[in-house]
Image (tube, rainbow over all chains, first blue to last red):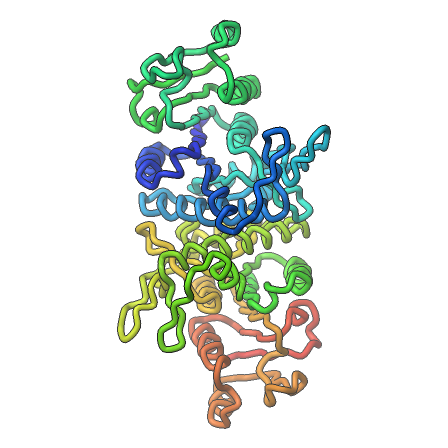
Length: 258
Length: 258
C-alpha cells in the first residue's frame, strides 16, 4: 500500500509566525501524498475580543454561538488557512485549503445536547476518503482547517485533533497512514518539566502502564485517546513531537503503535 | 467541445442573505461543469469598520494595505466563501472553495506603482486551466473568491470580474465557455432607470454604437471591456443580467458575442 502522512499542527506553532514558517518548511519537505490539519489557536479568541463578541463559557467549556462560528470561519478558514496554502505554494507544495464542507469531505452532526448545549460544534460522522484519494492522486496536498458541516448549509467548529484522527482512519483503507501530531513538546514526557524525558515508544501495554502511573493526565488524556482510536481504526503509527520529527528520525519524539 | 458555465455573482446579491440563497438555487440547478466566482461587496468594509481599520483612499480609489488584505482574506476567503460552499453542498452541488493560491490556480503580480501604489492588489498573469480541468473532471465545482497570490506567499486582493474573465479565457482552450455576470439589473439598459429597456444582443458593431451614444458609461465601461476581452480570448458568449437568466432563457438579459 502507498504511504500517506497526515500532519496536525498545534495552535502554539501557528500563533508564532517564525514557528509556523519553520513548520511549513518541514511539512513541504515531506514526500507526497500528505495532508495538513490545523486549528487556529488563540487567533480566533483575539479577533472575537477585538469585535467585542463575549466569550460564552459553561462549566469551564466554551460555547460556539452563531457569532463565534462566523469568527472561527473567518480566522481558521480565511486568514490561517489561506496563509498556510500560500506559504506551501511558495515552497512548491501544491496545496488546496479545505473545510469539511469543501468537496463534502467531512460531514458532522451538531453535538447532542446533554447537560450542556455546546452550540455550533460538530461531531464527525463521515469522511469521504474516496474524494480525498482522488485529490491526492492528481497531486493535491489538502490543508484542512478545523471546520466541518452538516450537509444542510451549517458550518461547525470541530476539534482539529479529531479531524486529523478521523481523516487518518478514513484513509487507512487506501493508504499505510502515519498520523503526526506536531506541537511544542518532544512528545509524551515522563516529567512534564523535562523536555528530554521522552517516552520514545508506546504500545497498548505501555499505554496502560502510563495511565496507571498517572504519567498521562490532563490535556494529554484526550490526545492519547484519539491516538489509540486512530490505531484501532487501522492507522499504522502515530507520532507526537516537535516539527523536527518530520525530517529527522533521530529527533526526540514519541511513536505509538497498537 | 464540452460546455462550461462560469458565473460571477455581484456584491449586491451576496450582501442580502435572501438574494444569495435564490442565486445559489439558480446556480446549483445549472448542469455541470460550472465555476462560481464571487467578491464580498461591502462585507469587508463593514468588518474593517468594526475593527477600526482606516479606509485608505487615494484619488477616490481604495488602497489595500496589509491589514486590509487580511480582512479581505477573512471575509472573502473565510466567511463568504465557506458559507457559499456549505450552501452549494446543501443543494447537492459538490463545491470546493478556492483562492488563486489554492492549487496555484491563479497567479498574479502586485499591480505596478505608477501614480498610485494600490498596495496588495494583484494583476492576473496566469491561470492553471489544466489543474482546473482536472478538478472539473472529477465532479468538483470550484467556487473562487476574489483573492490571488504571487507564488511567494503573498495574497492579493483582485477584482472578481477580472478573475471570472481570466478563468473564462484560460478554460476556452478546453471548453465552449459561457461567462455569466449576475447582478441586480437586467443587463445593459438603454435607460439606466428603466429595467425593461434591455439591449438583448450586443456584438462588436453594436458595442461601438452604444459607446458612441454614451449608453455604456461609468461602472459599465470596465465591465464591458472585460466582456469583450473575454470574447476576444476565445469565450463563446457573455451574458449580463439577474440570476433568473441562468434558468429562464426567456428572461430579460444581455448576450454579448464578437
